[in-house]
Picture 1: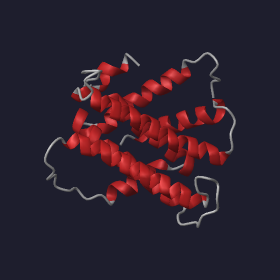
Picture 2: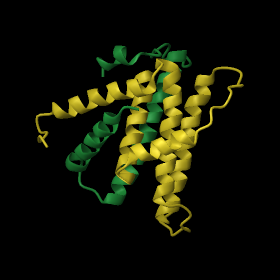
Picture 3: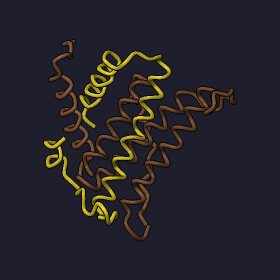
Length: 73
Length: 132
């Protein structure tokens, strides 16, 4: 892991601290933990899409390299 | 798929940074205690890898309740965990997701690093963002 990785993480955290709707410190913790669940749902969605597991949606995702996906999001 | 996995890791890192303030140390300690296990599963290992992240998420939720001493309807429950337990489990989830991303892109931390740079640049580009 590169050293500056956590510097970037802290920058994102400070942006949330400063710009997100005000909340208690404790609720901020809960929200940020809960956010992982949301992102994890998108992983599950991408996995189904990459495997074509949902007949209605077909092959909606690919395995992706970061470079291919980074421009579209 | 790689982007979504990277986002899970980034989100977990932000949560860890919020709870602990020193996520790097937590993850480093988790890395040192990690034992590589031989993969013996039949079928698509990627399914198990993603499911394992869900398992880690459940452990985090349990630890949060245990640290708060408050159950879902707001009732008082026994304090069974500390916030350090929450930090450790966030670290475990990060490593579980990183292992899955490693298999996908070859280097999870490179992928996460690129994703972080993109996200930080997107935040910095917002017109209402105060330079600080």
